[in-house]
Structures are given as structure tokens and as C-alpha cells.
View (cartoon, rainbow, N blue to C red):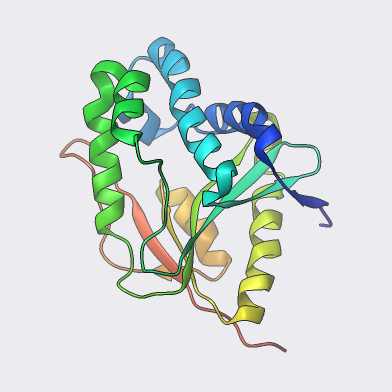
Length: 202
């Protein structure tokens, strides 16, 4: 499937925030982070605004479909660790998430501990598709676009899948398990660290 892909900029922050809020609103991890759906609908736009604004300020390369219905946020890990959040993140997170901040912080810690102990990989922090366009191949198209560039550069890609279903999709795209499953809390769903080694040019 041919999908036109562009790079988002600072002016796209509000649209990217809405896209990510909608894309990740439902699911086992979302249920764990904020069990009440009505509260989640209030918290998620504030939380995802933090992520979107920092990414678009230069922390990530944000690939988007031309219709704005899907986005992939890629962070460089040249020093071995991606720059996912701004310097005042703890205060912003507490303000955005209120009494649920502990679970968001636990998720951050668990994911941080799963980063590969190697330099020079690209970290797929988030890939989101608006609910009405999910399962239409847009996420895979975004990843294929970036994978081709990574393959030419000889760079690996790392991600943490938020469900067993998404982990199966990533396996079809060349990712393999990169360590044990992780859980941000005793009652939290499992997350799956995965790595894709660069493929040689054909």
C-alpha cells in the first residue's frame, strides 16, 4: 500500500496530541493507568500534550500520514538512551495526571529499565492510528518508511509493545524479543521489549 508520509512540525502539536489521545484511549494498559474511562478522557489530552510538544520541539522525528490519521514518534538513542521527556517532566506529569501520577511514573521506570545496553539505535516511542483508521495498514506503512532509512544507515530499531497483539504485528515487521516481558506494577499488563536489526541492502 502506498501511503504519502510527511514529517510533523511544531505547528502540528495540537493535532498530534488529539491523535495520540484517541489512539491509546482504550486497551489493557490504558485501563491500568486510569481505570475510569471518563477520568482517562480528561487526563490523556494533558498527558499526551507533554509527549507531543517535547517530541515536536526536536526530541523526535515524527512521521505522519498526509491525512494526519497516523503518526510514529522516533527518538534517537545515540548516547544509549532516548530523550523522551522535557526537563520539567515530573512537575508536568503530576499536574496532568493528578492522583494517577504514580502509575504513569511506574510505567516510565519500567520502560526505561528495558532500554537496550547499546548505542546508536532508533527508539520507536509511540505509533498511533486514529480508531476509525486502525487495522488499515497505516501503522505498518509508517514503520516500513522508517525501516528503509534505518536499513540504509545500518541502524537497529527498538520498541516496547504494549500488548501481545501488537507484539505479533511487530514480529511480522522483523522485530524479535529483546529481553523479558516487563510489568510496571503487580497488576499491570505485560509489555514486550523488541529489537529489529538492520537488514542488508538487496
